[in-house]
Length: 157
Image 1 (tube, one colour):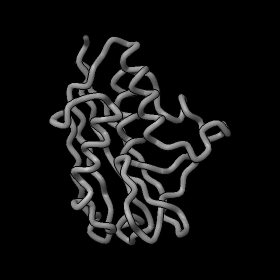
Image 2: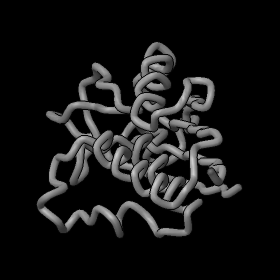
Image 3: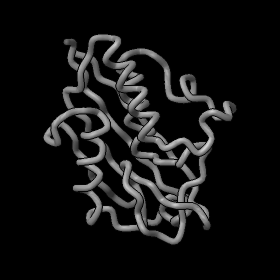
Image 4: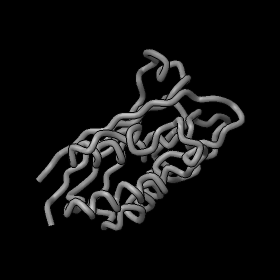
């Protein structure tokens, strides 16, 4: 068994779509990033790569490479899933925490769980998504950014 942790944070800006957990969330701002900015999927990808001791998504998908410009984060996670399979591991479970003042995450939680499970090719029961606020503290608390943590438990095939 292997365990990895992932973290990602991006600033919110106007005139960008907001994607979290592979789901487009209706909101007045989106996350600025070289890709679509989905901090949830980025954190999960980093957690899986960390558990495999294979670095992070910045090494595998550098923001200096134009091939990854505006890439859907679901595509990144699918590629990380192939790396996982090549290394003879499967997902035991994924636990994520989204930190955001706005928008409210709960109405989209089930769609996120379903989308993440589909990308990873696992049952929904292996995916957990939860959310909290930063209680008004820091850039997240002021509504300037959204962050996510993820923990991945991997099991050898």
